[in-house]
Length: 463
Image 1 (cartoon, rainbow, N blue to C red):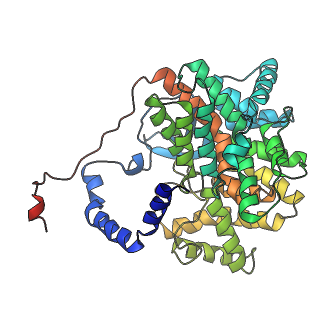
Image 2 (cartoon, rainbow, N blue to C red):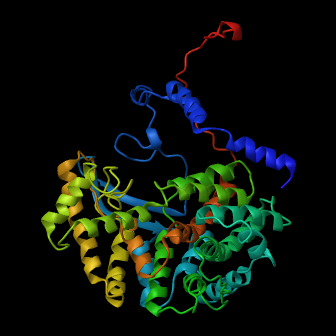
Image 3 (cartoon, rainbow, N blue to C red):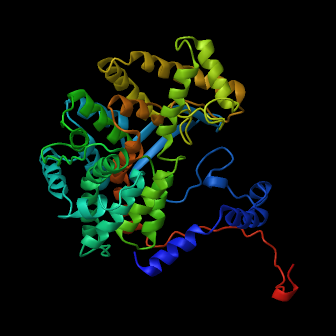
């Protein structure tokens, strides 16, 4: 280490927590905004109106979410949730490839990006193209992923994406053919970046064996994830099918979710694909977005310890009430995995997932846990209605089951959110291309300034 770097390190270590806390107090004294001002100025916090509906900020053809219909009296009425990819109901899409005993993520990716279902020949050619993209620069794993291992796989993923910029001779070219090439590359290598990052982390931080299983070109994304992650590379057909289903269900969810909106905002500035994807990854990392299923698993583990009889509805309901009142788990007053910003009566992704979760729990001999999950999904809406004033229905969302699925697949918790990203890069890619093709203007929302004019006070006169 050079003398200059050494001096910097020592200087940083000399900064005390007391100094930082003192400065932070200035922020707290001068930065708090009265919540009543949002209502006064008719500013919708989180871009959600008073009824919980999203403020319209764009137009998209990629996907749609429906949870209400207009009744005869002109008022909104809650309905079972519906999700459409390019106008195709997610239930029909999933039902189609499952009936033909095929995996569906690659077909779903084609649909999202190109706007229509592929023919048999087009799908085969698309899979071959993704397989050809599924490789990293010669020493990338050694020099980038292994050189600076991290205990956070989302940070590893974002750093790897940003570094791939340096290997692309046309990194700043935002023409549609070049952006399509970049997106297909990232869709193909995301599983490698995530799994290799995890294996490196386990080696350096937990002392486990370091092994690198290369992906096989003839395998799907779901199959390659399981193959690369496991030392023996083995997996069952049911495991691959359920992981593939998870990727499909997480691949896209309307333009209004936080990470997809981030993709639109950042893409509208004209920046490169790698920077835009890294920004979306940073959004997804947040526990209010992509990290929710981790909270569900942790909550259930606490519940399993605290509840003596998992089949006792009264005992389960009592725990759920304690959760809402901040007396159980993390004290946040939330039942994780219940409720959604848009859906009310049901989340179609959770409904689709639930049937396959039972099959997997039977294969893994974890039916007792499956029954507990179902009891929570059945009892929580009633408990929430009794304890909270809510404006719409509450039901289990996809995060409620996905963490359980991943645990049954023996997938490490560190990869739960990266798995979300591996799926959602398909939707992000479609939205980036849509933004570049159609918008033409940088996204710049308005803010209401509430700080009144202040006089300048000379330095000598300040307290």
